[in-house]
Length: 186
Image (cartoon, rainbow, N blue to C red; front, side, top):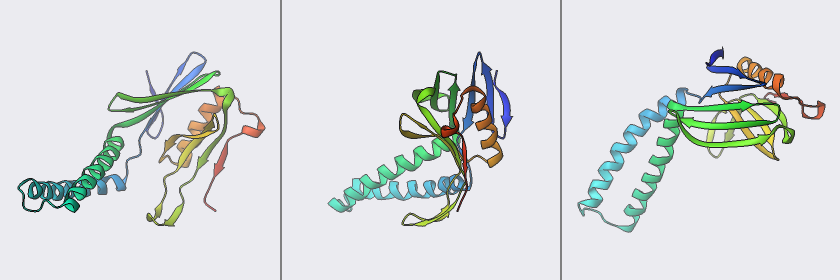
């Protein structure tokens, strides 16, 4: 039975290891996305009906509809993940398994040997101003496994991240060269 760890994190001890359930981040961006997506769908349906009725069947409108469908799928998937996504992290002294689920349906699972894991880190949110726009990024708890950076959780407060990292450190030993880091904005 999972018990509350802190914030939205739940956990349980499993033999010599732990299982942590991490919810997907849900914030003002997702609320804005839900409203925007509703208008986007209405506009796309209107454009699609015009094309199907033969009012404007140009190739550029067909490409526009294809782009509309692709954008709707992408942002719809983002919204579905925000509403019902969870990450399960099962950790023993031998291996770590990261499983992503949406409304209880498994999307994918990855397993790594703990001997190949290093650089457990918390990355604080920071301000970005680039071609995609300006705004704060979400905080992340990451680990490097098999040479690739893996995100365990995003959108956590610093306190929640520290508690999560402490639980991971109880099970998995990190030598000094692989010790946890707290990376803040510079």
